[in-house]
Length: 240
Image 1 (cartoon, rainbow, N blue to C red):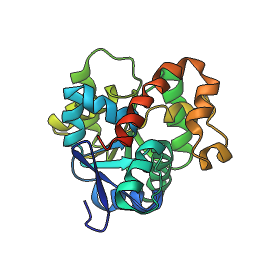
Image 2 (image 1 turned 90 degrees about the horizontal axis):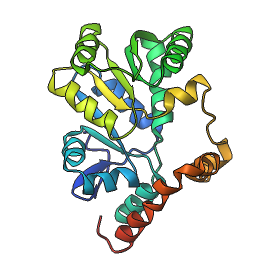
Image 3 (image 1 turned 120 degrees about the vertical axis):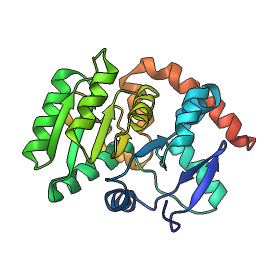
């Protein structure tokens, strides 16, 4: 990573603290498109997964870029660096990379979500000028074949929308197989882009309450949110 990007340590891995989305996207476009690079969004849930799952911990440690996504992780980082930091939502980072890609013919491959959602995403991106060289939905059985198809398409960017930690594990497999491009997990970004899922209003995002909006829209997420009290306890006692 560029030495000008401050880092903090969460658990036992470094996290890159970009000043904003523009800084993150510019770094990626200038340095990461022609070499195997995995970017992982770091949030409280990801930190807990790292603590509990050795395989996830291995993947996070092997990542080339770890950026601050969840507001809980941002607050811990701010306390450690003693400075104000920006949250880098993965959905917004992906959208900005797609916007830039449309201007310079960057080759993009899309993977994940349902066939309806990914086809709508592919169509929308192509209409906006993005060079989408391939798209496969997330319902496949032959992982080896999918990876070979991705490698054959020679993308500069691979966006994987399979949920965490499945998408991180898939990107790690791609890197091991020799995929030579920038890879990022994008979670539900295709659902939002295609209009299947409504994102929180801007004011909720600015207030860092997007998590609460999602909870109100999907009460079943309460069990995931309750786990975050463990993150809060660990943060308060400087265990992360």
